[in-house]
Amino acid sequence: MLLNREENTVAALDCMNSGSTARMLLGVCAGANLRARFDGDASLRRRPMEPVCAQLRAFGARIETSDGRMPLEMLGRERVQTRHFILLSPSAQVKSALLFAGLFAGVEVDITGDARSRDHTERLLRFLGAQITWDGERAALSGPPRRFAPVTVAGDFSAAAFFITAATIAPRSDILIRDVGVNPTRTGLLEVLRMMDGEIELRNERERCGEPIADIAVRSARLRAVSVDAALALRAIDEIPLVAVAAAFAPGDTTIRGIADLRTKESDRIAATAELLAAVGIETQATPSTLIVHGGTPKPSGAIVRAYDDHRIAMAAAVLAAAAGPLEIDDARSVDVSFPEFLPTLERTRAP
Image 1 (cartoon, one colour):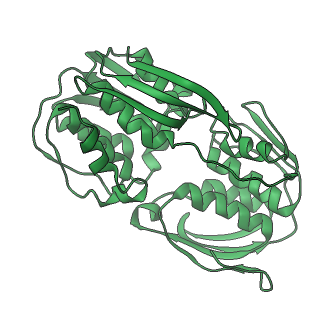
Image 2 (image 1 turned 30 degrees about the vertical axis):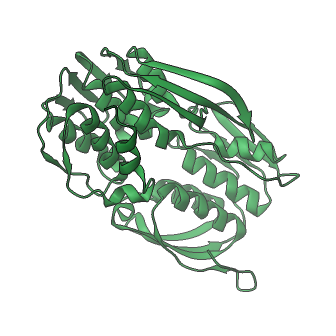
């Protein structure tokens, strides 16, 4: 990203592979009154951008989208208008965009309507000395950071989650993943797997740069079916395909509620996950916001499964294959979006 401070513009942001990055940068550009063009790959062009654009327009930003999606144009900002926001649905990305808009505009912002969505931005700003409060439902920024310091980023829980799930369902597994971020707003997968009788232990728990981290020890386990409510599903939203993969090995019906947002990710992850499980003989039932997995014994099939250009579906398929037997992914290139070395790393960690 190239900033021209005299012309108040940013070079075009093309070929982006992260919707969360795009949404947060929209907040930065709105607050700093910059002009920019945002675009992404085919999967990101399918992601709705109106939820964040609508609230940034209320802040004063001028944004033009392509039917609510990328590519879009940030045309700068008029004077700051609304500073008090109600989230239309709990979203850490929208919340962070609004916090960055206030930060870069130098104004206070108050955001309500949250439901304990991820709080990494709030923790980072607090670590840097900003005046910010968050109680799970309301975030309020009233002062900028007072200092700047090196930030050490913890290991990504969303990346570790694939190995945690694989070790839980693959027989004779026993792994230790070090230095993983275990922020409670995003470790819902651990709670679900523990509810299912997964053997997971946090060791050496500590805090680094405002974020809790730990080493995660996992052993394979016999799982049981459970019911996952909407509040818990929110804290595991990116890992719901993995919850469903684990549920495939748990006899009985596992019900996962409150996941309508998965319909609008890089793919329709509810439909894609149901299709993935069908490839190993596991039946599912889906509504617009619920997935029921009829768990049992997945059967190896060697089938070709579709990833729909969605990195999380492709990686979930690889995790399923690690325990159920060979599957072929139609196109695994989407894995490069978040974890280019995932497939060889998973292969190296598989139990003999």
